[in-house]
Image (tube, rainbow, N blue to C red):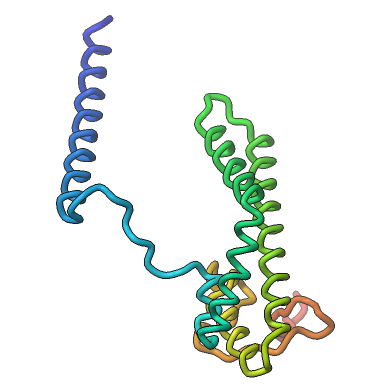
Length: 188
């Protein structure tokens, strides 16, 4: 080995050691502050459970149970989507970058996630059909405020404090009205 490669190795070793000492020290600080090694409690619910927050307590419990049943029944789908994302991540760091394989894995993960969301939507629809109109209104407001599009900042999400928008005509995708374009004078 040359002196140059030994110096590079020494610097890299020092950086890794400093990182490890910092991680270890940070872990000890967190443990001492929390009083032991345990998983922190989960505060709050996911967007699906949060959507039913305004329902009556009995309906809220039934809604949450219905959504959790869909998640429980689709663990394989969730696991497959997670595995596809992990495999795609692993391909990112390989010496040869296989864009097609990564894109395929990510597409599979999106497909699985879309399938799960469709099943959750169908369960929410079945549940909503059992509710009186006033409770359906509360659930609709919760889905608009905490649902998938709102959480991800989707283009079709209503404003956070806004009312429930009317459905788009003929079941199509809602879009803003086209703006009038001013005609420019002909080049001349």
